Length: 323
Image (tube, rainbow, N blue to C red; front, side, top):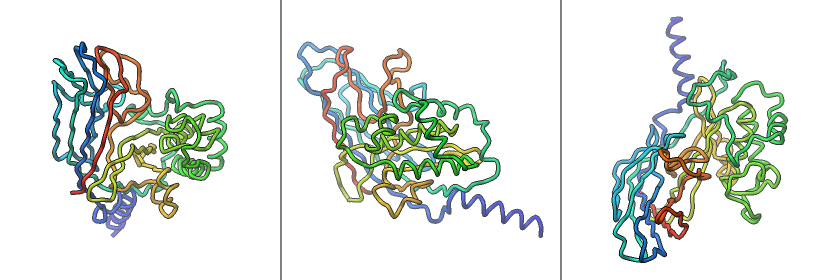
């Protein structure tokens, strides 16, 4: 009888942490991307392109893919965060523009973690692969101002989970989803700290900096929202964050969506809906890992070079179709 009671208790804890699989929702959709490189001079000899590639894990899978690319391509992996990248080369250019069409059929599951505060979650001995998410980046910094604010926000909280929740609530209350002030969208945590305005990038940059200043590993995740329509054009990217707690693992937060939907403020601490697709993780990503190069702030739109020089003359469209 004692063994049975222990077994029931263990199952109960696991169901709280992992969510009840019977209630997990999922959505299949087609995502079509078209990239048109414009303004190509007649004497151009070579175009190189790097495109973000959707990741795959227990909640996101690629069922089909189709690439229509006028050149050679293959999938590479960058070294810092192990993001996959569709990398290719176009030669024998005859027109003033070149178009690339990429289609994925993806299934995304709702992520239900329902984190619980369990004994031992205050442990600071993190796995090796998690340690890189304790460091600041060029714009998601851990400055004296950020450290002092993090200390103030988490004062009185004894566990990492409760500290992360205090930071989540602070960012949710302090930040305003507002694109009226110049500089929004860069994910500059110092700017967000001072101005308190921005988009999802700024919300989660501030969360990540405050979490890391509290010795809680936190990472940046970026992708696209999938509209709740049969067919739709996707207007822009969406990002969220995940923080790490020992004996629990990675826990997601989507503070900007919680800001937009007040009724789901509790839900978006630990859970993510299925109407999204994730592409890359991390900031300051070096695309050409074997040769180095300048890092990109975050990677969600294609990076293109014509004869070794970067060009921003790339028109992008993203469309989704629910399946």
